[in-house]
Length: 211
Image 1 (cartoon, one colour):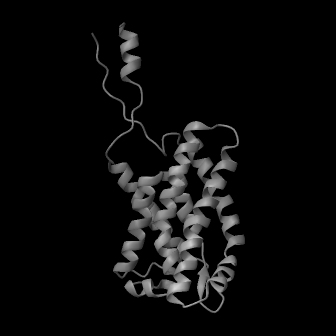
Image 2 (cartoon, rainbow, N blue to C red; image 1 turned 60 degrees about the vertical axis):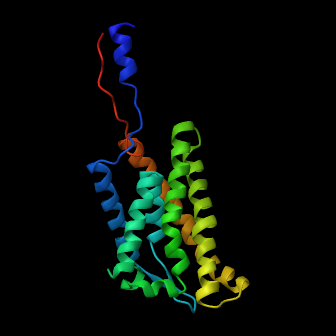
Image 3 (cartoon, helix red, strand yellow; image 1 turned 120 degrees about the vertical axis):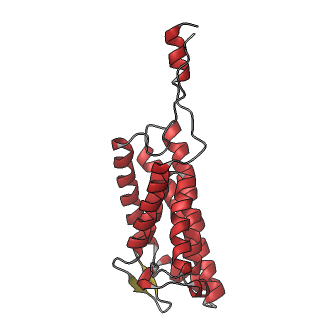
């Protein structure tokens, strides 16, 4: 093997198995972003008082930007801090009592949805070039419907004692906003990936070995 061939081979990107300081910083920043989004423009909806916030925008953006592992860690950190007593849930609420409220399903779903859309984003970014924005939007919507809305409905059934049909109807009020927020999340994520190509999966390069 020639010197040039060897350098090319050893400089090929490989995935890092451990997070570094940059990863931890991104996790902290996006956890703070999710927390801040929960406190902005919370609009109560229906008799249950589960508000419309910018939280789902921040959760989906976290997955779209960080990928599954770091997104789960960031949103999971937000949830744990809120349950531990920091007033960072919508309306400044906090504590384990949230898990007995009608919004419990949505909160539990957030880390799972962030991880799901992050996993789908990695697949899309690596394998497609055309229609990438549409595919990322579809990934965000599927993650929202399958996890956030499904667990949100379950939370209302269990904690608010609603019939399933009534819980589904109550949940439908959040769909128009989620569509808009997912469009915004994808738009922002695409801009970030264009500006920082290694943001989603930053490669590690091994040292060159010369013969």
